[in-house]
View 1 (cartoon, one colour):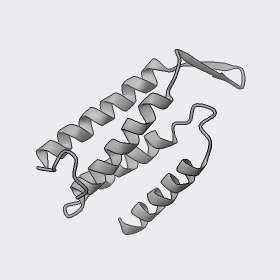
View 2 (cartoon, rainbow, N blue to C red):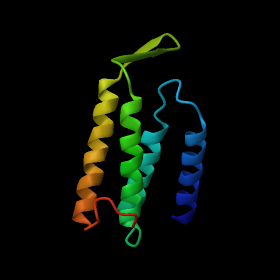
View 3 (cartoon, helix red, strand yellow):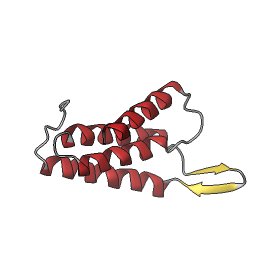
View 4 (cartoon, rainbow, N blue to C red):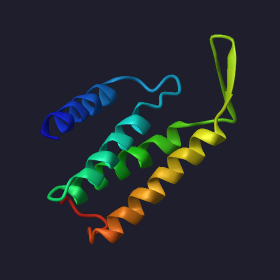
Length: 106
């Protein structure tokens, strides 16, 4: 689990350095991976859920508009926003069930 966390920290570092020009679902993937780590962890569950929550919350405002077109394909964006919200709600529920403090750095 330690190696997975290091990889996610590196991914967040790369993401923070790049410009937000096009829609990128990288944070969604990072948040999902932290959510899984939280599900699997006993000791660091709250910290992983907090990291997942932060990634999902950061992702939502980056999904702008109704659709995105690239390489000749147009994709509706509301399903993506819905999926991010679904995972954010799940992380909040899991965090509450685990007894995590809502805004702490555990």
